[in-house]
Image (cartoon, rainbow, N blue to C red; front, top):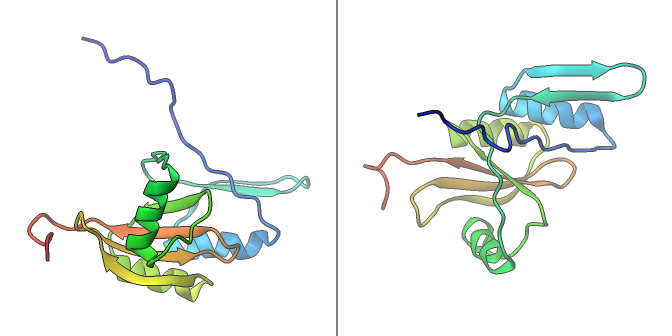
Length: 140
């Protein structure tokens, strides 16, 4: 039996910034990523960072408030927020803070057992880092 071709093959999120070098440093060095592609053709600069599997979450206002309350204690995010799964939450948080992140809220354990921390990148985009817990660690 053949698998049907998906109607979407890749999700890309494009960020426009007034301080390109600062944001490149934040995401590359802060997350330990190497660019997958770089453009610098005299008409501007851009790069692509491969960030693993991509999904799109669509929340209504009530769900956004629920998640914000769990992660940040109150409704604080805008219309777009990144959520990045990382293997080591403390290490990733430390690197991003060292590269200009602002801590929105200290790390929390979610009701579903993940460790999450809410940060803000240097341009103000909110970023949730999350580390999935082992089943034996959940519920504690």
